[in-house]
Image (cartoon, rainbow, N blue to C red; front, side, top):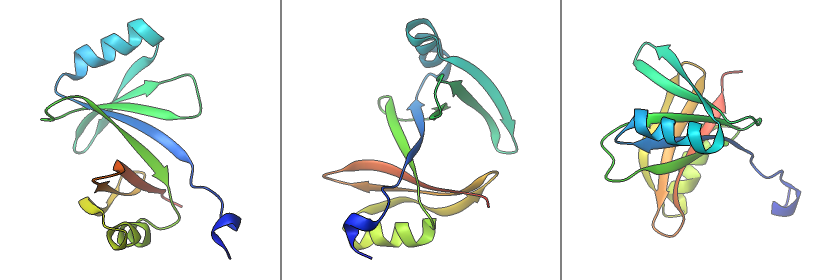
Length: 122
């Protein structure tokens, strides 16, 4: 199958990494009417964002120098896509790992930025 016959991988989630989850979610609630909802998980809590679209959203509080958006792209196999990113020169920031609803990894390229590779539990 040639590259132009392969279906583009869909963007399925946007996650904001920020040093201040409360202020960030309040900003988007006021500006865009995105509704935050706390989701409890074994590893702590996660702030999901109802963006009013099929695209999911969330806010993670972490020690980032400045807020940044991390796009999640659905792939067939996270392990294979992560290895392909390595072959293309990317650095793997988060090795493939299983979470409550699927598999993910995070890769970074000096020219293309960061992207999370995601495969839902099937």
